[in-house]
Length: 283
Image 1 (cartoon, rainbow, N blue to C red):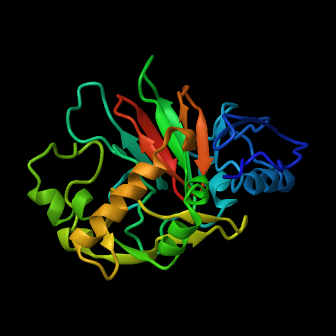
Image 2 (image 1 turned 135 degrees about the horizontal axis):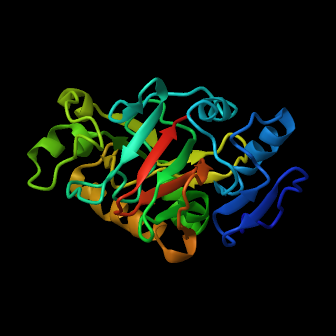
Image 3 (image 1 turned 30 degrees about the horizontal axis):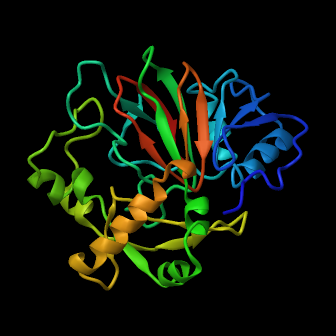
């Protein structure tokens, strides 16, 4: 497994403080409340494939500047199951109040919205309201997870694809479960069940367009089975990959501060249960 810091970029405009040798860094010197010049944005974007999660503790973007900052990394897209900020349809809200006892948005390790034909390549999020403790977020480096597999297992997964859908989020599997349901304040609860059940096939291993490094593209939230296999045939391999990817040495943990922002690309994300409010423009 190769450390993301073996050949670090030499940043002149910003300071990058690694969280560990595998994933995550604190990026200082970015004032996201102000427009960024092309060089600073380019340096920040170039660093994402290496981080691949960056936390910005400096002055944060607001509803006016966040979409412009996010567009530097690509066109914005809408998440159909999430509420938008009034007057800013490109900014979504993930909210959980202290008294909520329903399901938690992002309650398990996942990549964002992989049930889509073209899932988001990156996500930018800002902590709006945070508790005194709790609400930490764990991140996984899926590049490192792939590189930690044996050469034989890499050959196996390189040839496979997985079937993704949102059935557990707002499809028939969600409707049929005897578990806690979503709070209307957290997500939209009037979603089309047929749309939630729609299946999409993605490779089990992808190549990052900028870094050229291979990464696992699998998560237990949206993946239903290995394409071309039955559920029973898929289950052992998927369970192995889920367990493998969540190994401690492949992760970092972030404790949020008010107005802190994070951005990232090829890592999987898990938001822990907490009374925390988030606003997120997706790219």
